[in-house]
Image (cartoon, rainbow, N blue to C red):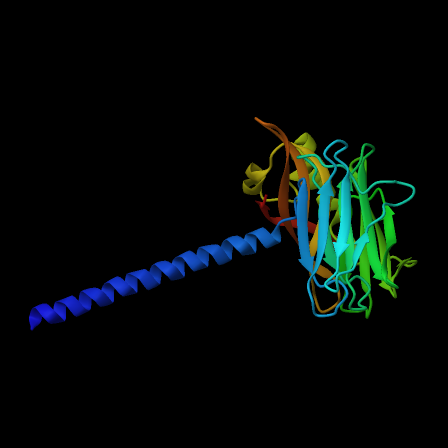
Amino acid sequence: MKLRIYVIKKKHLIWAAIILAIIIIASVIIATRKGTNETLNHIGSQYTIKDDINNDGKIDSIVINVDEKTKEYNLSIAMSDGKGYIIEADKTIKTLGYYSPDWPMHVTVDDIDRDKVKEIIIQSKDKTGPVLSIFRFNNDKFEKMASGRYQVYGLITHPASSNNFVVLGSRNNSSMNFNLFIAKEGKLTPVLSTLNNLSLGKDTIASFIEYVEKKEVEAFNQIIDNKLTSTIQNGNFEDAKITDIKYNKDGMPTDITYLVRTSVQSNSGNEALVYKVQMSLSKVEDKLPKYTITDLNIIK
């Protein structure tokens, strides 16, 4: 009788161990997927992004291919109803970009103007420099909403506005210039009266980029904890995306998160490296907010 009781308990222990192992493995998979979703979409020779673009409750496909000879990107859309579309490049820039392992295309799908139809934002490069293009689906076709030599994209939902704001930024020497637009009814309209509280930490992110490229410690140490600098590798800035903003009761951004792509050297050549840069409001002087980098991780 004692032997029989012992056998039953042993089986229970075995099953408990199996269940625990399954839970641990599932947790690891979930955590891994979460980290993957947080990174930028590094698109190589072929890639497909699944999303409901036209708000019909069905999944559409954004298909990206690279020409084997020229390395130029081609982008097409396969809608759930069977229709197909080709994304045409801006007539001035004439390309959606060229593939390289150190600066692959990045695609974001956002409902910029809150009309429940999502726009496609493309960040890449051509032989001249950065390329940023925004396309919208309208009247059974994809049309250009914006394009230019921008290196920063951000979609802002400000608590004081019923409209979204779009940030398009470019780097000028060691500084960062941001252009703010109101997104409404499929159009981007420049904000004429710049909102003082929406500097969005551009001086801080510009200092971070300068440190990545030049390792100038003196100015940089004022905006970051010294222990975080060991994470940073020498490289060249490519582009960035604002991914999250939190506000205080007065509508001032208190916490801002950027994903910053750089190109670094490795044994096999240049490759892309993505930093998740989190910054928090540290002080406000003469109505100009100052931000300090509070966390920094490589999420490649």
